[in-house]
Image (tube, rainbow, N blue to C red; front, side, top):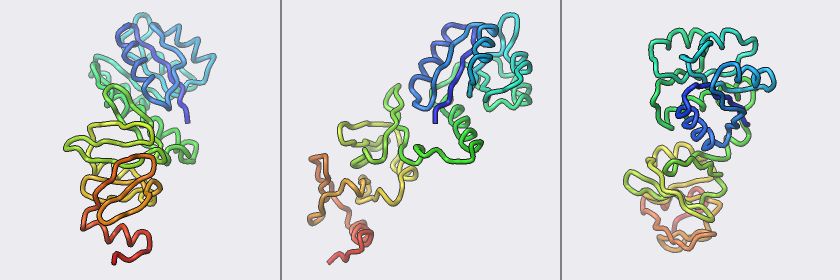
Length: 236
């Protein structure tokens, strides 16, 4: 699912920040970045916009006045330096109200609400949503397919996601990433390792060898019986 979005903000730096954040999210498509309301109205009349990112204080017509004028309302996320308009913004059924300055994480949380609402509106889950997870690497957000993952390794406050062709290190706990993985495809073999069952080549003693990577991973004693039970075998 792709959501087409539009930016309205008279501040160049704010527009640049939003454009950068949007470019990092695979399910967002930027339809336009406007410095005033009248430019945005032309696009809104010409195209179906799913998400509108709007400042409130702008010359001539402000963001709240614009939303009131629209016959068809996309999902609205107000992004402003003024917190005192939040109540009025939510009275217009805005999805979110973000106060400047804001982080990428705060922005992503807001747009993810729009994605969830859009999926529910269509009365069907995204077929792709059950096949991948998002992994942040520095200032980039990667969409990683579950089938691409060979294994995941805990590294204190970080994890390393080892794919068939590369690795990504991200600030995430093992528990949090495990909750996002499908149980029928992944299994923990040791406190610090989760493997993709489809990548498992063989188990020899207390070591697991995987396809596509040269690493041999240790199997924890307390996990070994669970692994064999998973495959309907006995750990003799």
